[in-house]
Length: 392
Image (cartoon, rainbow, N blue to C red; front, side, top):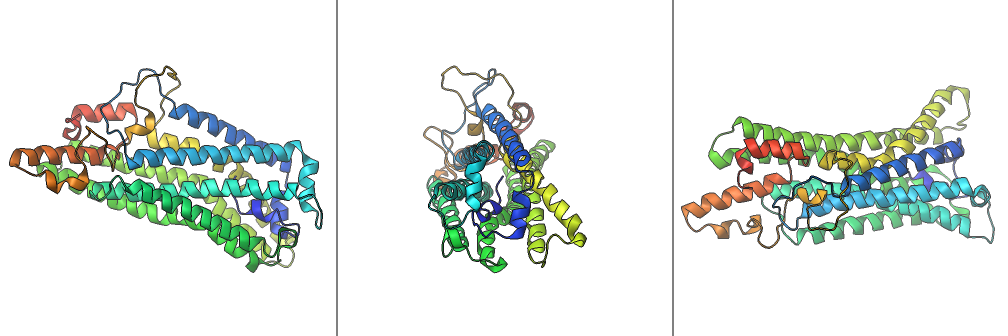
């Protein structure tokens, strides 16, 4: 579970609200985290493995969006492994964990483990948020014919640079002047919580706007091909819109509990005594949402693969052969050699009226393919019915 409270707990003089949730049934909470993360990890890997009966399709060899979707899944997998490791140590070595609360000691390993595991989880999930934002940007740019091969390099620089910078900055401010003597007070911890939740809130606010603009651009692109908006094009636009909706739905389900929990804990921190009877319901709500976070946060990886690719099935094909893997079915902003003409060079490909029609059709197909549903049944249905897919 990804929460700034994990880092705050590493301070021996932690606040009462953090102490409340971290000491609430720690064995049960760690068991929930291990179970949820393990299930999500196995199902995510199962989703990404090639399956028997999947017929390879002619797709571009490289694309920014296919790489982004893969990196989102990798961040979720590594973040889930961090949760499993942290929770396993918490359950298996209670004496080791108890030393985290001891001040002025010579044994630095308990605090090192506490800070290191918490930073690992925060960094990976924060990077996943930034990659999800980049996916929304890339989806819009590819429809606008503005993305290119070098775009993924910029995405890497922005994602990992911002994730590392915000994580290190938040941790440095939280543990000032030292880990054994963290400053008290809510004001001291606020910068750390801001750096943690900035990418999450960015996805919640910016991604729906970018997705909406992408859907509108797709509709204009479909109308521009033949001058009409047929039922097939309308169905394809609906497929794309539903796919974006499922991505945001998964994100809201998995992370809304974090925002609710943090709001409740912040309110409790501002009270003189959080154990007062009038605050009983708020304490109960904070503890309930804390357990919910332990279930939903790790499940994001598997739920995202369902939103990205649909259910890919159980029949894993482990034979080594050159075949398409699930994330390659979401081609978008870049193309490899012998693939469709690049949108960046669209104007240079116009030579005569026949080439104009052919190039425009192929580029439209390329821009739309990565936005459509990735499950096989949807692709096959659109292949049979929509002129957008007749070029395949």
